[in-house]
Image 1 (cartoon, protein in one colour):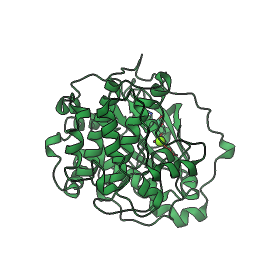
Image 2 (image 1 turned 90 degrees about the vertical axis):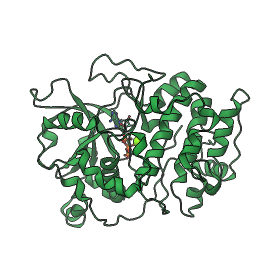
Image 3 (image 1 turned 90 degrees about the horizontal axis):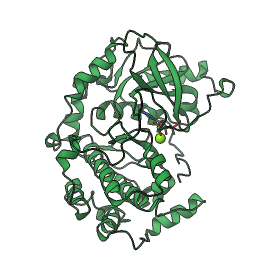
Length: 397
Ligand SMILES: Nc1ncnc2c1ncn2[C@@H]1O[C@H](COP(=O)(O)OP(=O)(O)OP(=O)(O)O)[C@@H](O)[C@H]1O
Ligand SMILES: [Mg+2]
């Protein structure tokens, strides 16, 4: 479905670096998992979510996740298998070379080559990704970001491995999801958006089935914060996202804000229930025309509650859009589509996911597609010229 990402990209800008990210620079490889366990219990309950987003964000250093781990190196890891690739990133299943550390523990290691990041004008996005992931890590439905590091050629983000694979694969295999399954995933995503917007002031901007993974218990883990940005109530202008999921105001390039994620949730619920997004064409320009027009056709089999929530989330005007209008996320959660959802049970993972993936051992990659290994001959080099211009911008890693 996705015809690839769009991102004409603004030139990168120097931004202030977040002091919180340098705190744990003395972590040893085998300490990573221990720290992760300690912090898992400190995940914020939903009741704490109504504070000023920027106040809470400042506390991220207390979580000690997403730290800059200067003495970690890619040589500390064995790269086992490619889990996924993007436009310029490759995510590997990896384990620590030191067998004593945690013999069964595997990680997902996202590697971005500095030269590609610069050539594709993604410096600012990568910085945003690292910073946002560090701030939001610890939420039950967001992939846990453990540490970052860098070397001469690449930037590295060490993440918890999520073995269930992409929701995209399950959706394509079963063609469409039942209303119950769709509701469960939509509800977890609603809680993620609520948290990102209300607590962190972060717009995610890349909601789509490829970026939603399933964990071993069948719950969601959102990955890929490549387009996420802390904006609070402000507007931003960079055209980025995936064509089928772009909100009309992004296409109009008239400035967009948090409301784009609610639009994308509407598109996602539609794709879950129907098996393809509501606006689709081979040619992205035709997709944009359809989006701006905003006319959605619903199959007769779709329940009135589902049709209604999609139509309210996919209001072409952001000021009329459910989630963004007064009442915010609480109003989304009280929509009749979610009548059967117990939000507390869901948040604390007291309910099992509708699809529990088959995971035979911790390093099982059976739920991921096969990818060819990277070809070292085609990899672009980070030159001295690039280094002198850009190296300071990567100092958070
Ligand atoms: N923590 C993880 N556990 C398991 N698989 C992962 C994890 N993180 C990412 N992946 C896999 O790797 C794929 C690509 O990762 P990600 O979406 O973060 O990169 P990308 O941002 O799309 O790349 P690019 O920015 O170059 O487009 C994901 O769709 C997923 O299949
Ligand atoms: Mg992705």
